[in-house]
Image (cartoon, rainbow, N blue to C red; front, side):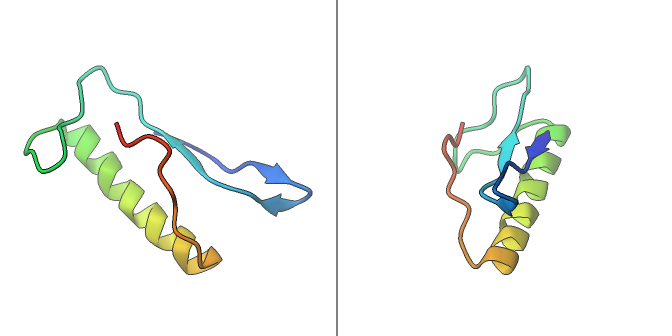
Length: 65
Protein backbone atom coordinates (compact mmCIF):
# COMPACT_ATOMS: atom_id res chain seq x y z
CA UNK A 1 0.00 0.00 0.00
CA UNK A 2 1.31 3.40 -0.92
CA UNK A 3 -0.20 6.63 0.37
CA UNK A 4 0.79 9.91 -1.26
CA UNK A 5 -0.47 13.35 -0.29
CA UNK A 6 0.27 15.80 -3.11
CA UNK A 7 0.61 19.45 -2.15
CA UNK A 8 -0.25 22.43 -4.32
CA UNK A 9 0.57 25.89 -2.97
CA UNK A 10 0.99 24.40 0.50
CA UNK A 11 -2.47 22.85 0.69
CA UNK A 12 -3.54 19.23 0.48
CA UNK A 13 -5.23 18.63 -2.84
CA UNK A 14 -5.85 14.90 -2.64
CA UNK A 15 -4.82 11.46 -1.49
CA UNK A 16 -3.61 8.68 -3.75
CA UNK A 17 -3.70 5.15 -2.40
CA UNK A 18 -2.29 2.51 -4.68
CA UNK A 19 -2.66 -1.21 -3.93
CA UNK A 20 -0.36 -3.59 -5.79
CA UNK A 21 -1.02 -7.31 -5.53
CA UNK A 22 -0.06 -10.39 -7.50
CA UNK A 23 -3.42 -11.94 -6.62
CA UNK A 24 -6.59 -10.44 -8.12
CA UNK A 25 -8.95 -8.68 -5.76
CA UNK A 26 -12.33 -10.34 -5.28
CA UNK A 27 -15.25 -8.83 -7.15
CA UNK A 28 -17.72 -6.71 -5.16
CA UNK A 29 -20.04 -8.83 -2.97
CA UNK A 30 -17.66 -11.81 -3.34
CA UNK A 31 -15.86 -13.48 -0.46
CA UNK A 32 -12.14 -14.07 -0.74
CA UNK A 33 -8.93 -12.12 -1.06
CA UNK A 34 -5.67 -12.57 0.77
CA UNK A 35 -5.19 -11.51 4.37
CA UNK A 36 -2.97 -8.63 3.20
CA UNK A 37 -5.58 -7.45 0.70
CA UNK A 38 -8.30 -7.55 3.33
CA UNK A 39 -6.15 -5.57 5.79
CA UNK A 40 -5.42 -2.93 3.15
CA UNK A 41 -9.11 -2.61 2.27
CA UNK A 42 -9.93 -2.13 5.96
CA UNK A 43 -7.16 0.48 6.23
CA UNK A 44 -8.57 2.22 3.15
CA UNK A 45 -11.97 2.48 4.85
CA UNK A 46 -10.31 4.15 7.87
CA UNK A 47 -8.40 6.56 5.60
CA UNK A 48 -11.66 7.47 3.85
CA UNK A 49 -13.36 8.17 7.20
CA UNK A 50 -10.45 10.28 8.46
CA UNK A 51 -10.18 12.20 5.17
CA UNK A 52 -13.90 13.04 5.42
CA UNK A 53 -13.58 14.02 9.09
CA UNK A 54 -10.71 16.40 8.30
CA UNK A 55 -11.80 17.87 4.95
CA UNK A 56 -15.57 17.37 4.97
CA UNK A 57 -15.25 15.88 1.48
CA UNK A 58 -15.68 12.27 0.47
CA UNK A 59 -12.83 10.38 -1.17
CA UNK A 60 -13.82 9.68 -4.77
CA UNK A 61 -12.19 6.47 -6.04
CA UNK A 62 -10.70 6.79 -9.51
CA UNK A 63 -10.46 3.02 -9.98
CA UNK A 64 -12.10 0.45 -7.75
CA UNK A 65 -10.19 -2.57 -9.13
